[in-house]
Image 1: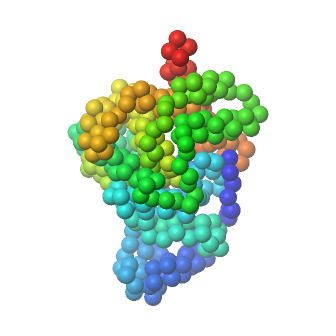
Image 2 (image 1 turned 135 degrees about the horizontal axis):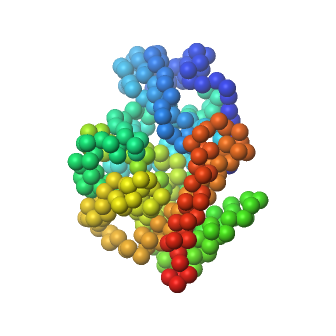
Image 3 (image 1 turned 90 degrees about the vertical axis):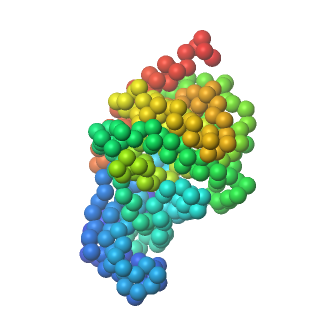
Amino acid sequence: MTSGPGTKETVHDPAVRTRLSAYIANAADADGCVINRTRKLEGGAIQENYALDLEISGGPNFGRLSTVLRTNAPTGVVDSHNRSAEFALTRAAYEAGVLVPVQLWCCEDATVIGKPFSIMMLSSGEARREILAQDDAVANSRAAIAEQLGRQLAKIHAITPDNHTFDFLTPPLSPALSAIAYYRAQLDQRPDAYPAIEWGLRWLERNAPEQSEIVMVHRDFRVGNFLIDDGALTAILDWEFAGWGDPHEDIGWLCARCWRFENLDRELGGIADRAPFYRAYQQSSGREINETRVHYWEVYAHVRWAMIALQQADRYLVGGEANLDAALSGHRLAELETEILRMTPPEAA
């Protein structure tokens, strides 16, 4: 668990809005900026998001803009990038043709609102899984949405260390072994024992795939981070975990049982069957999906989510943040441990 600079003020407070208006006017090379409305957005398990309705006078962004301010929650998880890193990753995705919100400005000066933040254009659509599960437009477009996701993931995976560099990321020699070492070190620091997670890490270590190509992976490519409007994908959100890795990692994460929620029969994240997604991804990327590797990274998804669930619970139990989502994440641990054991029976080792 990590804690960042915090303040009891929010973007709703008049003094903060005054400083924020001045910052935006300067960043936008404008004559002035008026913030007409602020509201906190639902979702955002780790970061906080606020809708800002802006009226900018002068400069290239002249006019009314619907935007989103993204900033740190009072506590966080160690895997998460800071706002400037996420801003750079999202911009790279935009330049690669990925459906992401247009990134406007990033501020590392904590004196403006009390902590670093970024501002992006507001994208249309709905991300909540319970709404998507009940939306007739989604129900009638499941295969089409799966194909869109496959094409978008292919664009993300077209970003490689050969065509992009980020000073905060180093390509790993082995994505699998690097990830195992990372989470084992975290687990060793915890006061309690988690034998099912230890078992999962050892299974991953013993079954680690050979060296793969290294690409940009989103690392949270799932329902909840997709905006869908009238049955069509409009944006891919939350790039705070993105980095270099095996392309099958994103596929395994999306298909993992833990992200299907109540729709276990729809193996593609509770949305649809895998087939249309696989087909679109392979056609767009020119890369064949290896089912054995997908299974490996699905096991990894449950181990990783179990570690994140522990960190999320710490935000409530240790950090004292009044965050119900974080507190409830800790209750998913038994489910995740059960799935780790189910997927890795000793006779299959």
